[in-house]
Length: 288
Image 1: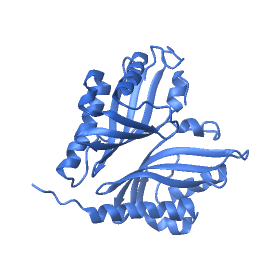
Image 2: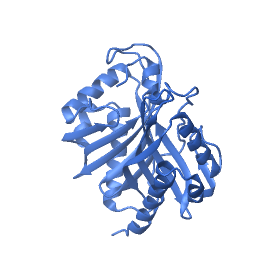
Image 3: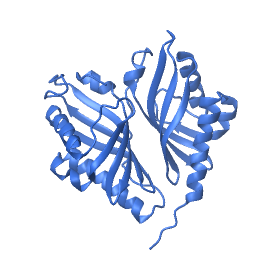
């Protein structure tokens, strides 16, 4: 059975979020941006207050901390009532040095306005500039697709979710070729020193599993559109082995990432990510 995909509503929701970044984060017009938020807006970032005024106040505090701050949208996936994207924030520190921060944002749209928001922030960058860096908030809801999707979209999402369960939580690196193309490419928002192709990928994660033998993965949010799947993920473990010149420290890791995948013929062909590196540093490992 062919499922009609609501392309018009997806485009409308993407346009709403792009409008927010233009009005608030590029042109700095909070008076115009307020109408884009739902009256019952809920923000899951612990730094942001309740209601539609919360994001506006938080933005003003960030602008005060980082003069000239602006945001640029990177990769974006618009699902039925959800839009997930990467954002690159640039400005200056109070000392006048260049400032760059990578985040991932998830918005839920209701009644034509932004009703809910989650994010993944590289708090390792913020930690050197702001006095209080809040703990990362792990979302409670399970990773399920919301709304209508084509058979291919559901199949692509299932590949990604199964890969997290089998390869990473069950530590079956020998089965990685079920989910990833041999010439798969990997991109990181903070560094270009990431491994491409399946052989390098499995070697990289073999080191991770040696360092964190109890590594487990929870996917909290998933969106899918066309050949793209995007997720919020929490990685947990304990650094009881050695890796990248650090450890074993015996310290816990609770790390959040946002991952954007392009799939071809039922396997991951390309992967982009935003990582919160602060837990990595706190566990005793160097960060890029």
